Amino acid sequence: MLTFERWKIVLVLCVVALGICYSVPNFFPQKATGTVPGWFPHKQINLGLDLQGGSHLLLEVDIGVVLEEQLETLVDEVRIKLRGESIGYTGLGRNGETVLLTIADTSELDRVRNILESISEEVSVAAEAGGVLALELTETARRERAIATLSQSIEIVRRRVDETGTSEPSIQRQGDDRILVQLPGLDDPERVKRLLGKTAKLNFRMVDEATPAADALQGQIPSGSELLYDVDRTTGGGEPRPIVVRKRVSVSGDNLVDAQPTFQDNQPVVSLRFDAVGARKFGSLTRDNVGKRFAIVLDGAVISAPVIREAIPGGSGIISGNFTTETAQDLALLLRAGALPAPLTILEERTVGPSLGADSVAAGKVASVVGMILVISYIIISYGLFGLAAVLALAVNMALIIGALSILQATLTLPGIAGIVLTIGMAVDANVLIFERIREEVRNGRSPFSSVDIGFRQAFRTIVDANVTTLIAAVLLFQFGSGPVKGFSVTLAIGIMTSMFTAIMFTRMLIVLWLHRVKPQTIPI
Image 1: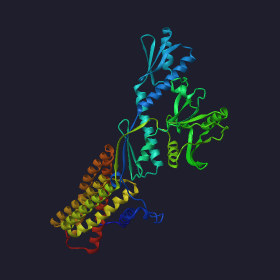
Image 2 (image 1 turned 90 degrees about the vertical axis):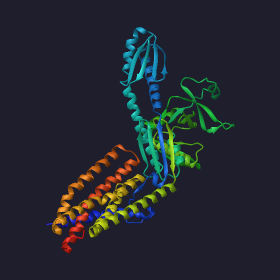
Image 3 (image 1 turned 30 degrees about the vertical axis):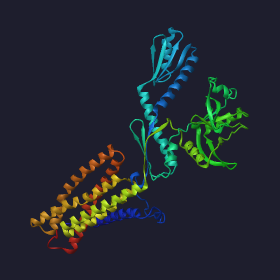
Image 4 (image 1 turned 90 degrees about the horizontal axis):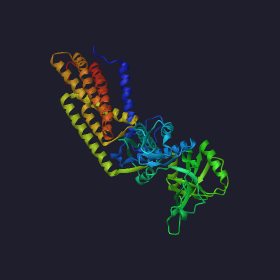
């Protein structure tokens, strides 16, 4: 006999109630959701870039810079290694992607080669004519370093964007050296571009006071120093002031654990706090160099070069300069998020205005309403009273989709709306299969109860087959697609599962309860 157990009724009603509760907040302004009790669902669906406006940035990571830095480090390691072994050499330096040196005593060539090969497994050493040795990074080392650089860059970009308070940013890898950043609802895209365009490599170095800046400008720079410019102090002509600093890094920005904008003498400054290692190094630097100047270098420019008045043993310090409140906040943000391993270049930039997004939302609403009216009209005309049950199931289905998207905090895009519109049509597909089978059994002379029972049981396999194949397609779209395609696949997959639930469980519950209550002699279908 056709039955629907009480526990199933309770389960179906609970699922429907939850779906409605989680979907309701989406029909109210965001500010209004803050006034509801804490226990009541208040999450709303996040709108994507194409629906609420924002910025689209395609960034390229300059991985070549990282490889160059690694080769420079290799040059230093080779120099230290050979000096420790008292081996004579000349011409040590980097030539493109190769480190070259010439061994003075060619009889030691094999010994030197073995010594250099012991530096790292990532380095290959080849002997050339005239006692020349060529060192290169292996292909595996290059590939692994490129992957690590891209992954680290994505993480740093994510931290910087999160620090700005942008909600639901989309940050994805694209290709071998590119990052796609989508920032919905962004108010100040120029600021984000400035933040993403800075490498933010901070270090502390001593000023070379023995070398006058005038000599450095004429190329007379000692090997252990370099010429930089103090960006916060200018000469009378308005040009940045040259300053000679030591190449050796006394304290690295890698030892920072916190940076916050604050005020000192009513001027914006940035307060720093180091970890245990950094605090020890910073304390030693200031203790051993009282009365001397040290430079605070950010991305190759001196942002401050104060005189050390006394030792600072506490592991904290202040960066002062010609900061505004915003620039102090941005510098603190960059230092907290960490330094990029390589520079980023903005290859593509698109801005979607909120008015265009509003037009997309309006168009999506019109498409959804028109699609729903046409489907409802067709199903009621074709199946009468049973069609009304399918329409009620369709309304529940929409509530479940919206509720599921809210629970998952999914980002709804224009293709996602297309997936919902498609789901409206697919939602009644299962009901059509069931109703047509019931109609066929009625024509064969079966009783109403028997027709409904056979209709649901026989159509079940066809419904599962049809929806599972579509679900597989949605999963593949999500796996191999990107951006808008993923948005379409998510709403399509959720719609398939909710439509199966409403057709197999909710519609059946309504019809079975109606049959037991009315006990009709014929079925109005």
